[in-house]
Each structure stands twice: as structure tokens, then as C-alpha cells.
Amino acid sequence: MKIISKNNIKSRHKRLLSLIKSNLLRLFLAMGCMLVIAASTSATAFLVKPVLDDIFFNKDVVMLRLIPIAVIIIYFLRGIGYLGQAYLMSYVGQDIIRRLRDSLYDHIQDLPLSFFQKEKTGVLMSRITNDVSIVKAMVSTVVTGALRDLFTIVGLTFVIFYRDWRMALCALIVLPVAFFPVVKFGRRVRRISTGCQESMADINTFLHETFAGNKIVKAFGMESYEKRRFFEKTRRLFKLEMKSVIVKSLSSPVMEFLGGIGIAFIIWYGGHRVITGVSTAGTFFSFMAAVLMLYDPVKKLAKLNNAVQEGLAATDRVFDIIEKQTDIREDKNPVIIKSKPHEVIFKNVFFKYNDAFVLNDINLEVKAGEILALVGMSGGGKTTLVNLIPRFFDATRGSVMIDGIDIRKVSVDSLRDQIAIVTQEPILFNDTVKNNIAYGDRNAPEEDIEKAAKAAYAYDFIQNFPDKFDTEIGELGGRLSGGEKQRICIARALLKNAPILILDEATSSLDTEAETLVKKALENLMKGRTTFVIAHRLSTIGYANRIAVIVDGKIIEEGSHDELIALCGEYYNLYQMQFSDNGI
Image 1 (cartoon, helix red, strand yellow):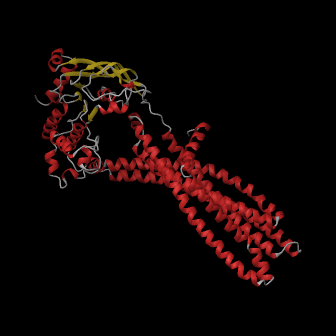
Image 2 (cartoon, one colour; image 1 turned 135 degrees about the horizontal axis):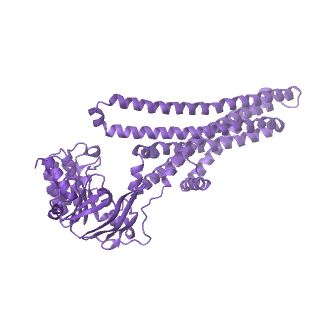
Image 3 (cartoon, helix red, strand yellow; image 1 turned 60 degrees about the horizontal axis):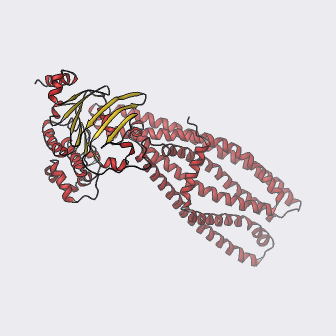
């Protein structure tokens, strides 16, 4: 179980309070409405004495006329108070949660790629949706109920002391005793609630994976297996929820029993005072009504404590993410890179992932406009190497430089403006073709978008779509073929017009026909750009000016195709292996 320091707790409370500041006026107005509700409740108990003594016992006609009017006014004000409090506190709660959710998403987007490699997508989704919603219940519903019930308790306490201070002291003795089990149950609720939230996050992760990979589930006939796994997860959540229900439910009967003891004593003691003539029946029933009304908000406060504990557990999970620090730090006075052809240099670069070095003493110089191919067996470190250029990761030792400037001294935004990437898995969004191509430049003119599509050999198939460039392509571009997706990704990179280009296995998953078109599109894309091409298939790197062979995180060979073949080393072995497999 994670231990949270007192400083962290204070910091989290301050951040929550800072979210409330912009709604202070609404909060004070809501508190005013709650005071009206509390006053009307107290007034109702207060009127019991004149109703009994003046109307029923003394037959006072004037009071018979006045008290019903007073009751109507009291309940009218009570209704207005409930309406105002409900709207204002809901507004405050919803606004706080909207900004907390925005802050969480904003921070997650700024975290480095290493964070997303460690965290599960479903868990992150659960933090933004489920956990923040639980915090909302604490902020709006609980705060509303707590303040309203607290004001009501204060008002009714005044009434019972005003009516009979001796009986009031007897009635209030039981309250401290009643709150002891409430606090104990609340701690258990918090622990169980954390388990429920973690279980819900696990279910979200499972759903994301099985829905995204549904084609594989069906292809391998694993529907029954995945159903069983889901049922096990929901059963675990069900057990935790039932534990929570038991713990929450225990606080109410404890309060009921202790409250019953207090009321029994009041009936005995108060009845004795009425019988002996010390007090009137009206005073006793007014006191009794106030006490009965008083125990109700006290019991509600006990239930609200459970919701507070759930909200605090959710708050911890939300702030665990918000407080994560990015290891990609920007220089205090960053250099802004201008868009032009760039030289990229790796100088004595080492990179450690977890405890193992995956890049070892990389020294590489790529001139402006040069096309460098990176080849080698899978897991050699090729993708890690190019991921250092846009600072998805930072080198553990050594430096990556653009035009002689260490990229850690460069503005991250201006650095990434210089780089376009086309990956092996085309990443598209559930939007129109036009918006996907213009993803890096939302204000691009339509003629530029069409020009990029033509250069990517995507224009013709886009014209065959029912809505052409305004056609929705589905989640992850699911309505397109592999070659169509890749060409839209290339069009996106063309439109960005960045001087540095990274192609990470951009044609490896395509058939021959699609690959031919994509290669033509890539040739258009690479013109005049400093390009890094990662390729497993050596047949796809004929246009490279230079080839670097990476094995176990080291560059062991470097040169042109002919020079590397003549060495009869690792590149020669890769070449022989691939082309002999193809029967060439």
C-alpha cells in the first residue's frame, strides 16, 4: 500500500482549495441557502410548543390564524433554499471537476513517452473518468450535505437548549460515543474504495484491449476465454463493492441504536418533568421534535463520511498522476530553431532503459539533406536511437545535436516542429480525411491539403470516397486499407513540411502493390530533407546515401551498400539471409 507524506496531503488539499476560489461567490450564496434550510428546520421544531400550548391547550384563536401562515412562509423559504443550494453547489462541484479533469489530461499529455510505455491506457482512462467522478461526488454532494446538516444541527441544538438545557445535555452525551465507530468504519471504506477503483481501472484496461484487438479474439476463437476473464474481473469488483456496502451499512444501525437510547432517556426524563409540573407538554414535544430532527442530520453526516473517504481515495489516485514529474525538462532560456535543412549529430550517446543500456557509445553525423538508413536485427536499438531526436527520451550520457546545438538547450516545441514521423503502424484519428492530413496544421488551406494528398499518391482513392476529403475514416482509420492509411500518414508529414524526417518501418506491413505506391510517395517526402530510415527489408533502402548497421545498441558498420557488401560483415550476412530467403 502506498504511503503518502503529510506534505503531499497538504499540497493536494491546497490544489483542491485553489480550484474552489473562482467559485467563492456561488459557494457563499449556496451557504446562505443552506442557512435558510437550517433555520426553517429549526423554526419547524420551535413552533411545536405554541401549536400545542397556545392552540390546543389555551384555545388561542389569534395564534390559530398566525401559525399556519408562518408554516407556509417557512416551507416556501425552505423550498427556495433547497433549489438555490442544489443549483449553486452542483455548479461549483461540476466546475471544479471539469477543471480537475482538464488539469489531469493536460498533465498526462505533457508526460514523456516512457510514462505511456509503463502505464496502461485503460488505467489512465479510468483516472480521468471514474476516479474524477468520485471526487465530484465528494466535492458537490458531500460538501452540500455536510454544510446543510451542520447548520441544521447548530440551529436545532439552539432550540433544544432554549427549551430545556438539562435535557439537552443528556441528549448530546450520546453523540461523541456515536461518532467513534463512524470514524473507524470510514477508514475501512477508504481502503476498500481504493481497491474498487483499482479493479475498475483493470476492467477499463481489459475492455480497451479486447475491443481494440477483437479481430484477433475472433480469429483465434477466444471469445469464451475472454468472457471468462471479464466475468472474473467483474466478480472481484462485485465482492469489493459488497464489502463496501457492509461497512457503509454498519454505521447507520449503530447510530440508530445509540439514538434510540438517547430518545428513550429523554422520554423518561422529560415525561417525569411534565408529570411533576416542572415543564409543559408543549415544551416537551417541541424539545422532542427538535431532538428527532437533530438525530437525522447527525446520521446523514455519518453516511457522508463514507463518501468523503471514497472521494479521498479517488483524489489520491488522481494526484498520483498530476504530481508525476516529466524527465524531459526545458532549458530556462531555450534556443528557438529556425526551419531550414539541419545537420544531426550523435556524440558519445548512451541510453539506459530501466537498468539495461540499449544504446552504447553512438557516434553518428548526418549531414543536411542526407538520407541515412538504419538496419539490423529487431531489438538492436534503431527505434530508440531515432526517438532521441524529438526528445521522446533523453540520452543517459552524451548528446544529440542539431546544427551543433545540444537539443536539451532547444525549445521542445521548436525542436518537434522540425521533425515529421511516419511509423510502421499508421496512427490516424476518428475524424475526416482532411483533418487527419492537416493534423499538424489545423489552419492549412484546402489546396495545400490536396497538394499533399497528390504528392502522397492518396488523392485518387480519396476522390472515390462518398464525401471525399470530408469522409470519416473510423477509429484508427479502420475503414481504410493498410496502404491507404500509410499514404494519408505520408500526406500528413508532407503538409507539415519539416526539414527532418523519420521513417520507422514505413513500408514493412504493406503488400507489393501498396508498397510500390507508398515508396513513390516517400521519395516525394524525402526530397531535400535530412532523413532517418529504419528498415528490416534491405530492398527498401536503395535510395539511402549511407547505411548504418546497429547490433546490440552499437553501430558496428557504416557506409554505402557496395562498401558494406565488400566488408563481408553483418550487413553482408543480413543481405545474404534476406535475398536467399526470397529465392534471389
